[in-house]
Image 1 (spheres, rainbow over the protein chains, first blue to last red):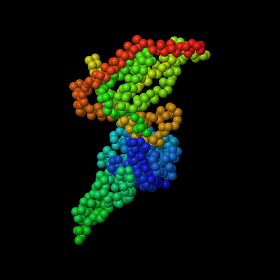
Image 2: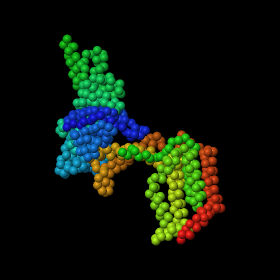
Image 3: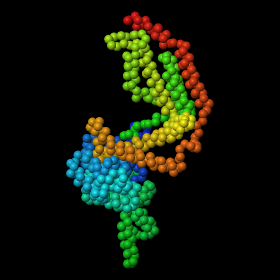
Image 4: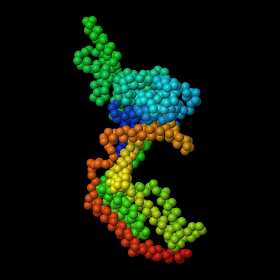
Length: 286
Length: 285
């Protein structure tokens, strides 16, 4: 069963003078196992939207249904929330326990699992995020490096085996190698746990690489939603909105403007390389 | 959740009271407290409360804003009133029924304690309503600076207050984020007895503390890299000026204290009124 969002509107401090409507009339479905990329400029409502997914905020009007559980209802919310794992931007907001092992087991312990199952899940989660069990399990989370902290935070959510994994800018502040590692990890969870992923990112390159569906938010509304191919063919519109289309999409657009007859819908480096090779091959043959 | 809490209750307006030097306002508050405590006659107290109302009117702060300060004492005030009413046994006895005895001294004392508390709290809240936290700490620093001779860290104290005030909203916002992150991990903050709930707060308090220490270190580094080295030789963008307005305010306050002292040493209105009312209880007794 999917997450269904119907006519979702959210207003901060509704009824007061400072009332601010962050989300307007959002309709969106997140299917099982789907990888959804969520993009939008700062203040477009991305963070507000993902907090609706596990009931940390409730809609002012409209509904959020997670696998049949209505997130506006207090009792159903707890059940719905256990299906949605949420990783926040900064691991510092989450790590608190004495050891990495204990910290990762916090979520599973709250789920009231038995100790063997918790132990199994913690080991599995640490393996999936690439933290060596013998080296890290007994370390304090506060003496880790930035990247290791982020892995620990991720593992803390993974160990809950969420059906939907929601990531708020998981790559913020990481170097290119770190970004790649996180992306590969996310792909790893997806293939091994079969969870759906909702990823918020500023970097369209990262979204272009893995997402099956891309949602573009603008001023609290869904500006456009579709496959990466459909979205990134709008490279110029995205650029106008203050977003940076993927490198390959921009390059293809520039090359086309210079008269190279490249096909539309190129948004990954691999596709661009292939198209260019074909183009050169075609000319060479002629 | 936590963002709804408002701290620092400054009420922005353009009034004579707002424009007073913060040092003047601090001194006025101290003088006002002295006045409140030297009053011994309930009817002279009307003078002090009248002055309070006059200042509120001058400050353009709505009266109900000032009175809001009394709200947290809504339990304390009746309790103090009743305790004094029943416990103090001086003067004439008005009512004597089984173990309950009410005397004129008790009534006076009960009224006094309530009026004093109200006068003190509204006076202090008028100060914070009309003075921004930053100028308040600056005023405090300047008032305390003569104590630097005996190595009292006036500047450091003021700087600490400023920083603390500055970071209250930041901390609240951060606590909100941490709470959400732990709720998303299935933390249960609402059920269980008080010990369980206190224990459930740990996953929120620990990251909050760790982050605060880190931020304090970063702030210290940022201040040092801009050559901050304490108060010595430090100049200000806005220099406080003690003007005619301030002198007048202090003179008026001094006049109030003088009036209180003279009035109650020459008149005994309370005694007069008690004398007038005495037939009421002597007849029934």
